[in-house]
Image (cartoon, rainbow, N blue to C red; front, side):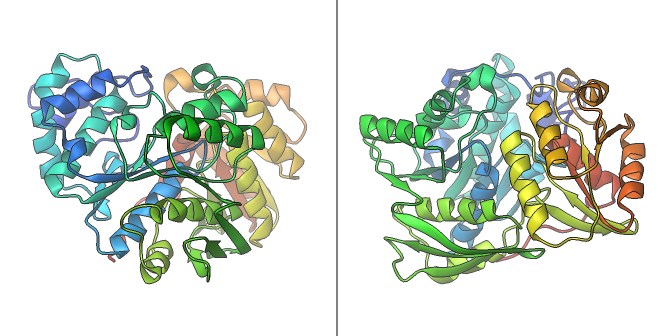
Length: 442
């Protein structure tokens, strides 16, 4: 279908409706406001009102929590949808119905329906794809969808929804040009998804961010549940196969022993935040569905462990300091073969200095490179990063050569490849790991 960085061909003769719908809209364009998305949805009969939704935001972990919520709901027997962004390898990952990419024929039909309104609109790519996803869900008979916030929350295109519940997984500094340069400002934007009467679940956040959510929840009349108060995570166990933990809440005072096939302490908290939100809905999932759904969640590119080329690789989309800190923490817990080496390609608008420094502080030699599929306008200069941190870093601008260099340094040990979705996607392609079936029937 469409690849990671080329959403459309610009609409030449013979192009599909989807290509014409998305063509010519810049991948990275950001435009605040809900009015364009609402206009698109109005033109096709407000499909966003035809299904229930769990709305999930957060600096990190919101995609994983969305995927977990969807698999639990599907295990409960619901007809589910999942909307995420960006996709890792294929556009079809963004819009899923019952655990699989939406049927291409349905997507094409819905794209054709949106074309008249979209052709006269200056809506961004994300706004158009959001409208397309909601129309697909409506036409596919989706009962409930897990919908990931794109950026921020208050003015994100997905915030046209009035969900059954919402969840925020984490808050840290990112996209400061758009969201603000303090944790409180970022939290205020993310708290913009709170709505009157809609229950909200809040994961582990800094105290200052928690105060902002409490204030906003009280102001709009949103019942707020928090990990550490109405629910808690206990006895977290991390190994190569995933993460086990005990979840205890006011809804489930006897506790549940749970596991997810995603390594990392943070994944236990992502799962717990999703469950705290689901339990606040009118359709709380039974314990058996919670266990089954979490055990079968698949989320490629998140501490994805591969055995290739005579050694172990970990591919992770970690794209900001907080995310990379969690990835490095997990690397230290799971007992993968040593030595460990990091290969980093980070987008230029991220705090790459802190990310390189954290990899070095963890004792990892670092190979700096540039992912070929990174958006041109956000491509970083690895040479500048090397000049800033020459000790313990090596410059290898070519991505294929960087993979070889990192493997030579690690020997039969482990290479961590991280820095962005582009970096993870390019690594999975280079390591021939893109065709593994991630879908699970439930």
